[in-house]
Length: 195
Image 1 (tube, rainbow, N blue to C red):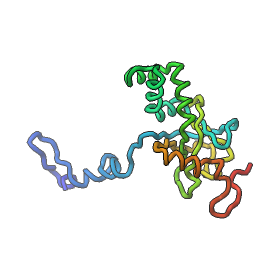
Image 2 (cartoon, rainbow, N blue to C red):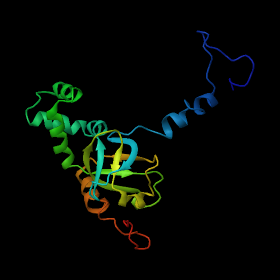
Image 3 (tube, rainbow, N blue to C red):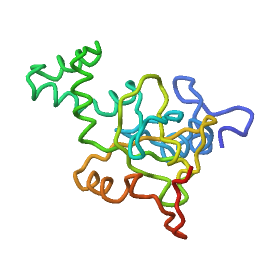
Image 4 (cartoon, helix red, strand yellow):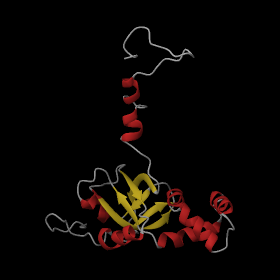
């Protein structure tokens, strides 16, 4: 082990060899760096705040998160409606946040449910589907009556948001996972959404 002895072994450029234990342990080690956590496309994370004006099946997505989540769909929408001739122009329109971008984004969001997840996910109500609505600020807005299923409150809890991509996943989200469908506890049948 090159990390234990007094004089570490060096290569031809006088660089210290990394021991096997150095490679696998610590923050930059193999386990924590690549195996335990990975970045996921079409997902985001933010603090939740109350959104009392939302319907039970809606969630408020901040503009920054929404534009990042739906960027590929947004680019396709801009090109299909002949508002951009190629991907580069569409990306620059998104970067400059032109007014037409927000209109196309709202159209795109109308057709895509999102999944909200609050860790730890202990039962099936820990992940539910919502219809996203654009909101100002940087926090995800949530109707207060759906919090019990997530075991969430508004004291700084964070939630992850995911976009189901395939048509099958979107259909499953709409038919099985929408929050206004999951009003009763799957374990005992008691109502979950109570004031």
